[in-house]
Structure formats: C-alpha cells, structure tokens
Amino acid sequence: MSKQIEIQMGALAPSITQQLADQGVDIAPSRSEAWDNQADAITRLMFADILTPSQVEKARQRLMKHIGEMLK
Image (cartoon, rainbow, N blue to C red):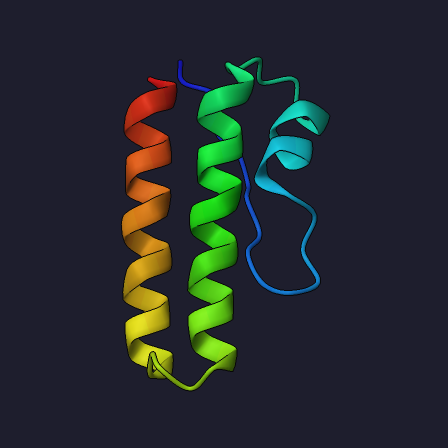
C-alpha cells in the first residue's frame, strides 16, 4: 500500500518542505529545498505574467509528478 500525500502550491501555501514534514515524510533537505525553489519560481513567473494559467497548471503537474517519482 502506498501512502498518499497532499501538496498545495501557490503564494499562500506553506513550503513543500513544511508540508512534507507535517505529513511525516522524511526527505533530504537539499531535495525538498530544490522543490520549494521550483514551486516558488512557477509562482513568480505566474505573477510576472510570463506564464499563462494553463502553463502554470502544467508546470505544477510536472513538478508534482517529479516529486511523486522521487518519493517512491
């Protein structure tokens, strides 16, 4: 049985590092900090009007897929 995790992304969401820690997932700080930086970059590009909403969604889905693969 695999454990499901929930991660929220966006300007008001806690960091991925904090969300994983709150769910009892132990991951190397360097890895989770990289994910935090990537999620923050997506959000910054959205607010700078560089990414469209659909591009933001696609980028977040790809990040989530990457996180899921690394947590297996």
